[in-house]
Length: 329
Image 1 (tube, rainbow, N blue to C red):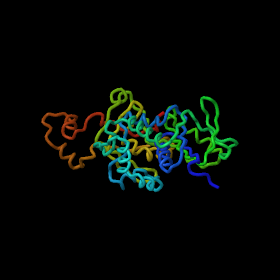
Image 2 (cartoon, rainbow, N blue to C red; image 1 turned 90 degrees about the vertical axis):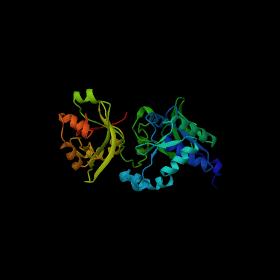
Image 3 (cartoon, rainbow, N blue to C red; image 1 turned 135 degrees about the horizontal axis):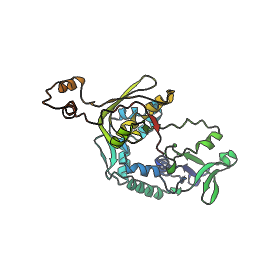
Image 4 (tube, one colour; image 1 turned 45 degrees about the vertical axis):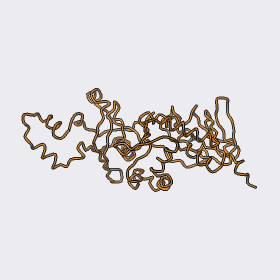
């Protein structure tokens, strides 16, 4: 005879946003849920992301938003359909956190911080009966068999737990010091579970800048710019936005948006390089640019003509072609 639902023990391993959302759904179904995480506190990468403004979702047309997931669109669209951007914002508002739409159409908490949202969320989860177990790193199973117990390394030594069901929300390998180290791959591989290779995405890229570029322009934002990239299948993407010239290379929202095809180009190129093209004046046609440049200069130098007539200023004269993935460690 099956145990009553109230007696079942459900575990979520991983206390990032995905794990917390899974725990909320399980608790809302009337089941007790235990959340385990290797770190001393939950959602550490979520909090760090909030330092930069906490981009929650996007206010653009939903059909357009879905296409941003590239090859994963068919798998993710049913999930996004269950919690589209407007409903996600309503969910956040129910936590007592207001949101607004920025000029980029990205959605942010009004106070631009992650901590108040997380505090309210954790309070609601605990009120729903969710129990948290920090400093519990899942390492595998007794006798390599889930039925014999799930093993966790803790400051007090190994402990073993039995569960009726387990949700794995273990993240990637993007930031080891915050808990995303990918070490969960090993026990699953030992169980012969197929695991897609972990790959960088939403990342910056290294460029071998000259000392002149590095010393003069590191930290410079490039705004109102567009990139064009042709992926390994011959499909061309053209996106507008902004990014930053950093000391090591390039980073920022526009670079993150093309990071997957750029990464794949690098992986398929034996020289480990890739190329994309920059449109420094995406809001002007070639004809408009020519017309402005043909106007009388009135004693202005050509650089001043570029700066004053078409708003084309340094460091717009640098060329970016060679790059390597820069993991955020």
